[in-house]
Length: 102
Ligand code: HEC
Image 1 (cartoon, helix red, strand yellow):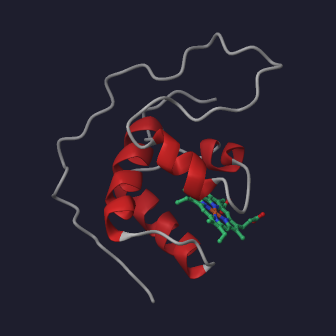
Image 2: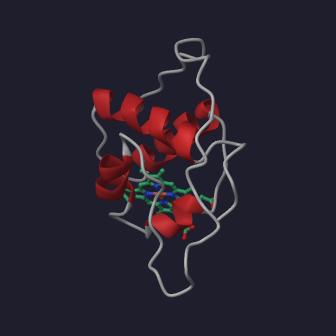
């Protein structure tokens, strides 16, 4: 069940304006995905097989995140269609190319 929704233009105007990560995270705090609408979803789905820290190390465009989610689906991740879009939106915003490094 391969799924690929390359709706590149659908959310073309998405821009990262909020500074989602501040530099003030202390060393002892556990890795936490940046706040956002899709954050709980990402924690639930993307933390199943590996830690979300692995996800947080990456900075990608929406298109690249969509390809990444597809790869995860191929590995066995269960992602519904609405969840796919919500995850792509969230990841592209919270962990887009312009987001600060962790
Ligand atoms: C069914 C299990 C599973 C789920 C669920 C899952 N992944 Fe993965 N993911 C993997 C495996 C297996 C790897 C390879 C792990 C490794 O290389 O150590 C991986 C690796 C990754 C990598 C690193 C790729 C690289 O080349 O460094 C990223 C980024 C990633 N996953 C993102 C996600 C995101 C985002 C989600 C949620 C949509 C997710 N994963 C959900 C299994 C999963």
